[in-house]
Length: 371
Image (cartoon, rainbow, N blue to C red; front, side, top):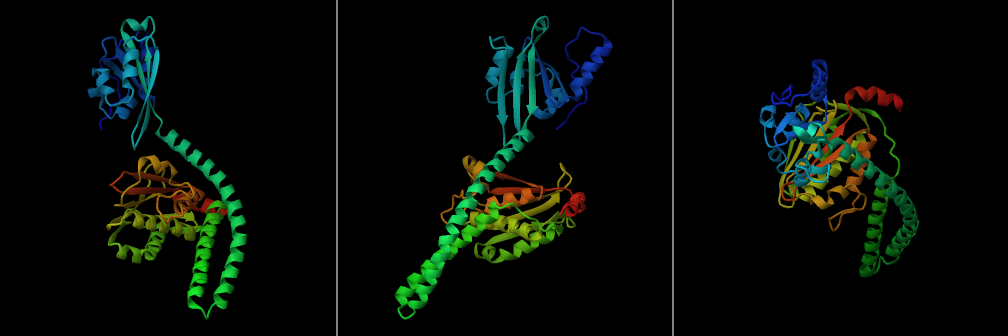
């Protein structure tokens, strides 16, 4: 995508001194807010670099282009155009959300004396990061509330479970001479152990995490986690495709055991999503935006429906018949405790990619000192 550092040569003339014009041009050039000025006949007469970048159009294709062409595909663009063309509403808003970006458009009609030449302005604001932070804050708040409830429930369940396990074990021994009855007692005991495992996982998710901080090699953690899933990968004819060559020495300050649990959960999640085989692709690369490291885990499975994606990190939420809904909640909890973040990109029938971003390596000594 080509960008220009200057405004359109077709920019409207501003009745002001040359120094003031220079200040105006400099301001428009440096704004992160996209600005489009629209003439009375619906042509774009000014487009600043931010607007060109957000619309993914070079300046030479933006200046002079009808505004309805630039806004084509934006949901609610009719309201914006109506405002610019003289509707009673002096301001209108529209939102354009894609898997990668969240853009907000505002059309403002020009006022006298500028309205003789200028129809109005279209302002474009990139709210992608703001929406991500908003979603992350909402998720943390939801998880905090659920965690408090989970701890109470886990303790209430654990006490009677201990008694049931003791009685079932005693009963199994007493019925050793009657195999059919002893088998029933063994099934009760197996069910209790399954519930105890669920309770333990619930407490692991809900309790504040204490990290045993050390210098951790991400490549080594990934390799260790892979060992635990080699058998299920073979069983389902899934090929592991690990490429760690772009950051083989990547290290962070973290808890190696808990990080192994993160990737084990993600790998098992991927295996369960690929009923007919496929590829488990893992990439470790530098994080260009934040200066740390990013790990992506991709599967060729059935994908996650858009309507349930906001809930996948909620504890006890699962679409699998035998799932507990704890795995991804634990993943999120551990990554956040390491100062990182988790994002998911999925489409039905096209697989799922989890992206985990961890802080830059320069924080290792700092985090270890904090501990």
